[in-house]
Figure 1: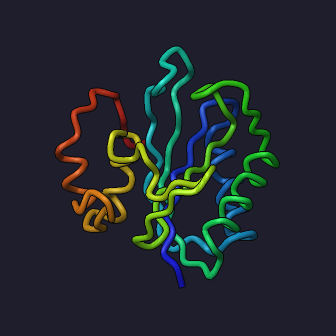
Figure 2: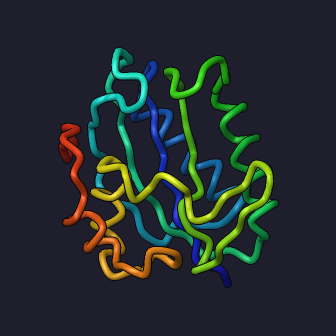
Length: 159
């Protein structure tokens, strides 16, 4: 079984409903959720004039390959109404594959660990809640260390 972490995010419409729908689809199409963080409300990152996000990190175990997981999460995003119009633009749902065990994958369209996760408070805050001692396979630091070293003034508050 492979340990997989996802970051879920939504900043359009009924944000909590979209997170719940994403989890339901993930449990149907990938694997049951083992752990989930609280939901955090976060200022928009990258495109700062967008509505605030709700973010949540989930952990699951699956036999699926990273490539199959990527296909499934892209399908789930589409089903929930995600339209890719602009980078960092508003979205009904965003599902990021953060980690696949401690694998390092660098393929077109698939980078694991997620290349920006160590720079984002909205990712590290919920991730540290459920996996503080998980070691980033490239940076060789725990999630808690990365969170504590982060210099990000973005407002991230637990709901």
